[in-house]
Length: 445
Image (cartoon, rainbow, N blue to C red):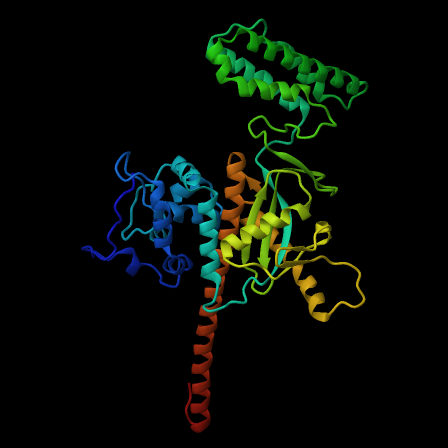
């Protein structure tokens, strides 16, 4: 149920956070720049007006999502630090300090799924507006687009790991449903695991290979045993899990759409092609950046292993949806070969050309600036390893990471302007003292 909005005009007996905090602090400035009413008006229809427990304020929940990615924190750490940080609380709309936590960490999960991908795009749209100077129509006419992979929070997949997890899950299901298995193979699996560890010894490869085959056989037996002994209602509830186990046991090396993780079955494998990391396991992400300003104007997740040129239509559709206009020029790398235009947008791919203009050459050079943007997104804004579950988690993670980087860019610009203004004042005062000193040489300081 939606709650009534707090009154921000009522004064308390003591001074509030607005008068106690440093008004030049980045979070203080950002809190007053964001249009919070936009989120409240857009997300209010997602709540019931009469039934249900009172919900947390919408501004509080949106501010927590922004802070999570702005400061690179987990849900648990964010909730804990919120109760200790005055600036976090002011950013979330509090007028006075609260020593208690704002919500349970799992409420952030529910709120993310409540507003969905469209709500995340609204946050990204607001981050773009905060960065845009007033009456600037030139932002976003020329953009750079590139793709990367956001890795999922899974272990490096091997057949042996998947088979052992299947065995563990089958034993767990049997324990919960009270099914007596023909055999659990506990001691044998320990012995086989030891044999797999020493595959680099003499004749160890053959022994380890035989152990791998035996573990797969045990996993298949337990899956068949569980399927035959579960009651019809229980079998129906575990049907998806059993089908997933059967697919893992039947898949081969050359198959497509393989399963690499039991708890994240939608993870795909992407060949990185580098010596230190040959493969990445996650989902493909496309980032669109304005060439003139560096603002991230679009961020989209893809769950399929498609060619880069196939991602352009959806990327430009999202760009038009968020920015309300179409891009005139799109600069990409040679991985996008196969597409030259989409609607009114012209796509430029670098290629040998003697008659290339100087302006076009500079635009191709500017495209390389998107590479460090992707690097910062991965290292500082939680795009390197995605901890959110499922395909919705992939979509949410990339958009919030892009929005957080835009907000950080705006904060850095305000810091720079403040430093320049202070430097100007200091230089002006120094100039006045020099003039006075020249006029009166007897004046000493």
